[in-house]
Image 1 (tube, rainbow, N blue to C red):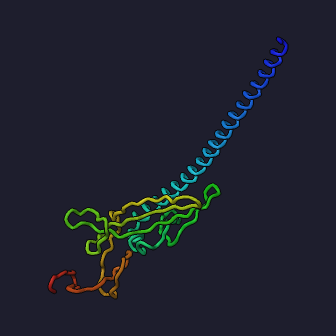
Image 2 (cartoon, rainbow, N blue to C red):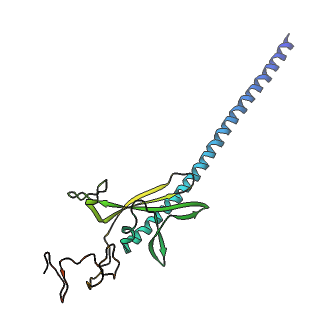
Image 3 (cartoon, rainbow, N blue to C red):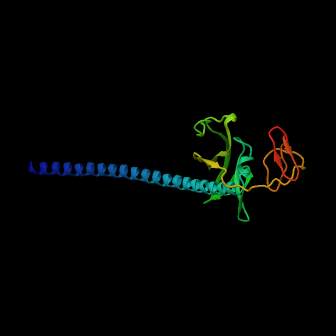
Length: 212
């Protein structure tokens, strides 16, 4: 009788150990699976962060190029096709200029595309604040809104909006009024003009509201 009990106890102990082992293996497998998934997500998140960091870097570089071009030549942004036109800055012989179209940049093996658009700006006639909606009647030719964007495959683009102001410009001297009239943005030393109404040219140039 005691021998039978010992045999039953031995069988029960072995069975309990087997169940415990199976439970432990199941728990280990579950933890390993979760850890692998977490590691995979972490690596994927790290890759996304690295790609976005590259996009932000290219965006910052583009904005610096735009600032450099605006400081040396206001018309580089003022004379472009507004809202729909795509442009990008180009560094040539140490000088930033503006070129039409998108620019493709390869960074760490990934192809990025960057460009900027320009919008006209209007100001409230009383407060002089920039208006949310552009009104041509309140146009401020000394302020332009630039929206720069960088895109890359399988990700949301990054963009930034900044207002640029005409505060540093070359001054052209109007030395004569015999050149044919013309309109548009002037580039020194161009001294053509739109019209010469109420202007009398002589030894001294006079501007007279009703004629001289």
